[in-house]
Image 1 (spheres, helix red, strand yellow):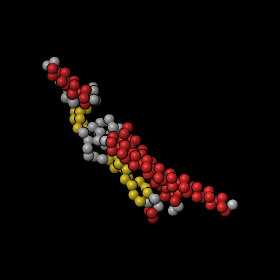
Image 2: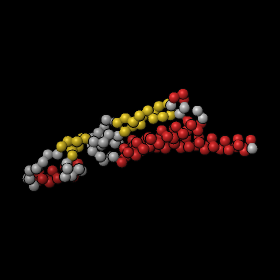
Image 3: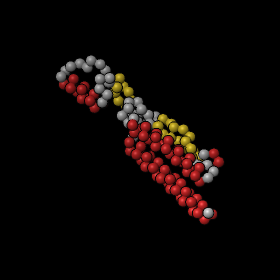
Image 4: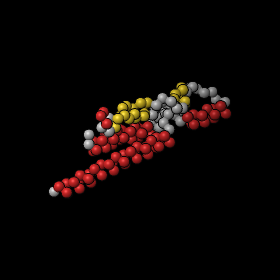
Length: 140
């Protein structure tokens, strides 16, 4: 495969990775959301890189509560404290639900890594284009 094909496959694969990171960041406050991780592998016959799959990260989620009246855990705790101080009984018990396991520091670190990989492959495409332009100028 040509250098352009190898660079193109890498650009395509890493763009899927950036989209996955964007999805994770967009859902950082979504209860029960599990971060997706893109798995990469060598393309057949050494023809670049490709996406092997996207897996859900199941560890690291924080337990929380789902309250249909107020989804903020901090607000729920404050409301419970206010009810206890006023000696008012809690009228409903919140149901336990897992919060998102997205860690923004990991997402942005991964994003920097993907940015560097995309930049390196873009340089490869530009260099190849310059070389082909020079070869055409020499031949013509």
